[in-house]
Each structure stands twice: as C-alpha cells, then as structure tokens.
Length: 158
Image (cartoon, rainbow, N blue to C red; front, side, top):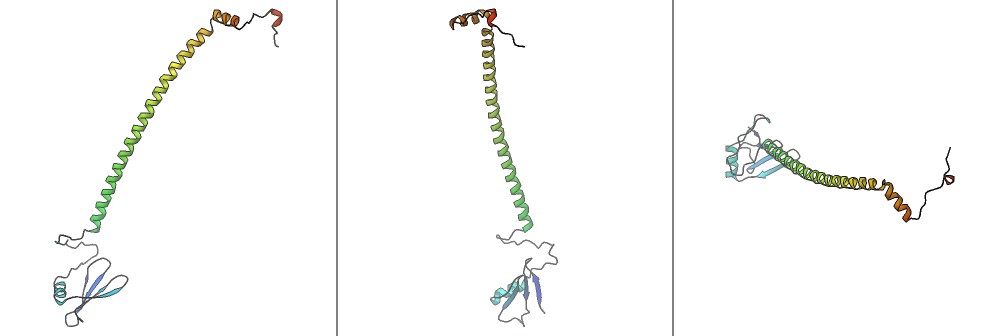
C-alpha cells in the first residue's frame, strides 16, 4: 500500500511500502519537477515512523519542537505587517516633527519681518509729517533757488 503525506503546500511526498521500495528511495513530487532522493535505511525508517500528515491545507500542523523550527507564514506576515506599520508611524512622527520645526522657523521669520515693516511705516509716517510743514517746504525751495509763481505764469486746464 502506498502512503501519501503532504509536507508543504507545494510538495507531496510519496512513500512506497518497504517491500516495494527500490534501493531505499523516497520519491518526492513537487509542483514543477519530480526528484528521487536516496535515503539511508535508518533515516528512511525514522521518516516512515513519524509521518507528518495534514487533513486540510487550512488546518495548521503542530509546530516542531526543534530549536530551528520554521515560523508559520501567517505569523511571519503578521509580524512583518506590524513591523512595517511601526516603521511608517515612526517616519510619520519624524516627518511631522521636522515640518513643525520648519513652520516655527518660518513663523519667527515672518514675525521679525512684520516688526521691521511696522518700524519702517512709523519712520515714513513721521517723514511725511515733516515734509508737510509749510516752513520746511519754503526753506527747501529757497535752497534750490525756486520762487513763487506769478499769476500770469499759472495756466488753468479745462
């Protein structure tokens, strides 16, 4: 009688009974190719003694008690997903912190510029006030050798 066990999702192991086994060979059929592996009689007996069987692909097998046992792919995907989420969160926090600092710097620069503009406005307002004084205008006109116009020199436009 032939014994068939599923070891992985992608491979099937076919073991022949001891009376039909040829040269202690175990035939493994994979998804793309078939290969025959020669096994020592003691190893073949231990493999035959403890077959790992799965009823369904959806059911989990018992994890190996070996120290280097493989991790379930679902657990690996979950771990990687959580790791990626944590890294993305860390990058988002660093990015937000950086943009917040940049915005604070721009805000302080804008405040400095605003205070400079207010001082400039006050200075210009004072300057306008001094230029409106009639005595100052008369003095400057005399310095530049200007005279008040005579009535015949003034022309009215329609």
